[in-house]
Image: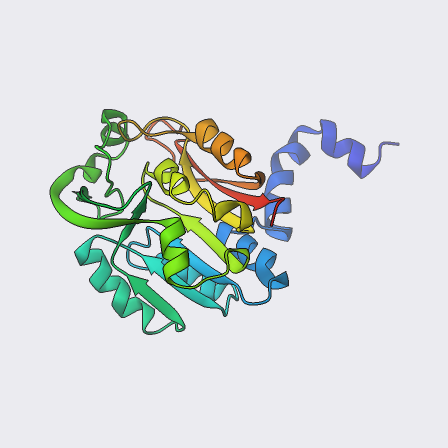
Length: 245
């Protein structure tokens, strides 16, 4: 007589319902929930939220149990105003109206039509517009860009107590380039990465992970992100951990 385990390997009906049962019994955790559990062994963790938009990740992180300080960077003026209001209800939370990149400069950011969710310092690619027609650029805005290393120094943060979240719409590699001294000491990084170029001159998945590997970070978790209209996966959310921290 076949065991239940053997049946679940070969029975058509059981194979069909098994994923639903497993998902009900043990649903996948969100990136915020996973990260919140990982940082419980840190003494005084501080979240650096790069590309905060209106604060949605900060809220998710708070709801996942994080009680430490959040410092959010959001350079787009309209989004920053909303972020400032959001932060008041989830203290301690500091907000900074700057972008981060590879060097200190003034630059133009492209403001997207979809509530700023696709706003980027890079020009949006045709494939992005085909997948998400409402993400087109409506205007540009001058913003101040600093580096991760300089901001960690200015804020007098200990990199070993920093958790880094990067969601900057194709500009991830530039943020990393500006943080080469701090990143090896930063314990965890959560970042959104494209599997195909959604912005012009964007460095995608493997390129960025190779950069992080060179700075001492290894992938410990991957979550599915957005899909295109044809169902293909376009972005993933990746958590890395430093083996040098």
